[in-house]
Image (spheres, rainbow, N blue to C red):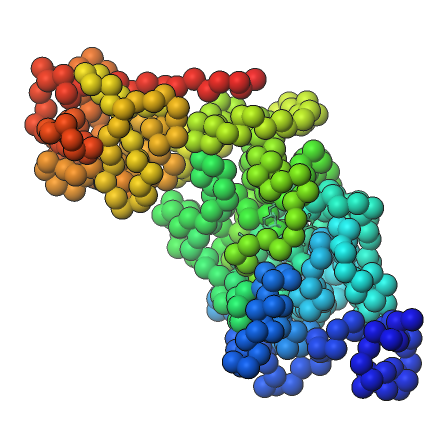
Length: 541
Ligand code: LR7
Ligand code: MN
């Protein structure tokens, strides 16, 4: 039966090889065994010739990356050693624990999945690798069935394929992978990664030193267009914004100072991207593994990050460890139940369990999520109590003082002009544009501002910023350095004074202008009086 799937030249091959037909790689293209100058070797980009442009575009749709390019690259392609020089001469502990590597996938491409597996096998010291576990989250591709099992059986490292009975999402699939695995450390990877020279030892070293340390490599970028391998930066770390989107932000000076400028030392990161990390098995269990009430995709990375820090652990980016990941611009698969609903549900679960009253930042900027049901969270709340985890305020103040959500704030809501009933309003404009002014509507959205303990007026990662007398008042990315983003509020006079110019926020001179201005402060002027009002978040329990 399987024979008929293959073109004649492969059939011939079949009779020459001591395997049954189903053992043959399911598509004819992905190759094992590289040649020094083959496509993509040493992480070089693969350029598809013009005449194949159409085929490229067709295949791109399947996985939302250039599948044609990926299939031209050997499954065991070579990569450059991208480590900093100081990393190459480091000594690691003698008795490092063994790891199981758990990879979950749904409809992953053959070439990217197997290139992940080969890169692990080829670049991990064998005595540190217990096994590789592939968890199939109910994929609908024939080649990920028996052919995958037959292929991995012949590899020199134990690779086990386990299957979810129905589509469950990456969170529950990882839980199954973890439960199946036996290594002392569990390393999770996405299904389209490539490990580089020396990636594993520094990760295991940090865990061996302290079992409550959770470690991530630097995530290098494998281009979704060319599969070029591009070195990731050690000068960014994980954060998040008010919408609870994971974001990379520049490593702050305090973290450089703590490491005395040595960039080869692990970096304390407020959050992790989620896909690539290693954790001690017992610590994973004690910490409450994952929230199994989360579906499909999203939110679990922040949930775990908050949990690690708030419950006494440490989250590090180990800058001597590099693993590439294919970043794509769109997801290729379906979200049963709706993309928005699933992500909102997961985010509500993490906000409700871990963020205390700071969840209001999330709710006020995306009021639509309040309608989203999020199921029973009592077990996770009990976990938080049992582990005696610290507050979210503690996390913001001690682990993430440069967060977009301020650890302390005087108000979160509208900034209302007392006299005229107009409010500061982003007008839907973005960064580097002027802030506007519009009738107060009390609905949050574009009229939500926090006056922070650091005396910024900010909406998410945007701060009100003035560079010259008389304004304009600009919306600039918050820089945490006070300067032009420093304001003072006098709750008696209601004046909002910009410190550098020593001028006060004023309503526009001419009523048709929808821009606030700065004028010399005058507490007798009603047009300079602003009410900083904290809004209620309805429906929170
Ligand atoms: O239903 C699903 N079942 C799955 O098994 C949906 C996904 N998956 C698998 C999928 O095949 C892949 O191996 O889960 C993995 C992650 O999904 P991706 O690769 O489609 O998404 P992503 O790379 O954008 O995912 C990032 O965010 C996720 C949030 O839930 C997870 O935390 C991913 O692990 C995470 N990936 C990374 O951190 C890699 C670096 C990206 C960044 C920043
Ligand atoms: Mn991914």
